[in-house]
Image (cartoon, rainbow, N blue to C red):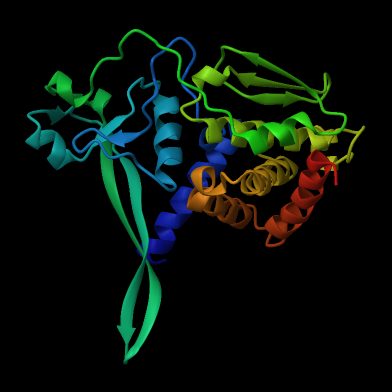
Amino acid sequence: MTKTAELRQQIAETFIAALDAGTIPWRRPWARAGRSDWQGHHNAATGRPYSGINPMLLEIRALREGWETRGWMTFKQAKAAGGSVIKGSKGTQVVFWKMLKVDDDGEEKTVPLLKHFVVFNVSQIEGLAERIEPQPEEEEAAEFDPVEVAESIVGNMPSPPSIRHAKQDNAFYLPAADAVTMPERGQFTHAPGYYSTLFHELAHATGHESRLNRPTLTGGARFGSREYAREELVAEITAGYLCAESGIGDEVIGNQTAYVQHWAAKIKSDPDMVLWAAGQASKAADRILGL
């Protein structure tokens, strides 16, 4: 197995491990309740936010370890900043991915470039100056700027489930009550993240027996099962469709969702999963749009 294939396999297994645990970290663009935690996973030495698949990988590790900080550094960066990685600490792998143009016997081709690095959470590093990871200040509500088209889609959904907001740390759809529960709008770091999350939960609601009666929802699939993975893909792709319909697709979906979908299908050894989920998502989106 090549290093690239091995790295991708590790990413796939990390995703499925989170799926089995019922954790959907890429679908969490809000601050934890009761904390001024508006900054996402970032390199604490440069201040640059991580992108692509990396926020998911870092959030899974942080959740598993119970770390409160979202700053990360390489071993060399920690040393340059005057700190040192605590002995015995295990790093977390992140990836750098882009399409690179190369010359192939006079013909220009575009090939994928994938590298990996090991980073350590600030909680694993001693002796860092406070400026590296500033302490959160008194909590202030985030400014929420509604997206008119997205509001219209939600407001005009025929026979919708009930939607409630509460200051909490998760978003979910409860089939027995036909109800979507969301964090408060002010907890979200930006409006597109709010709508993509709400669209995801509304997509689950379309599977209710009173709507599309989708077996992956009504069948009570357990976490990590094939049917559970299928239902999550339906909801994720539906959210992508509706975000594009609202004009916010580029801000919330991007390569990360495509990567997650691709590896979810591979690890489940079901080559038709994404195609099936895309078809079901089309029906779900049409149901929400009233088509």
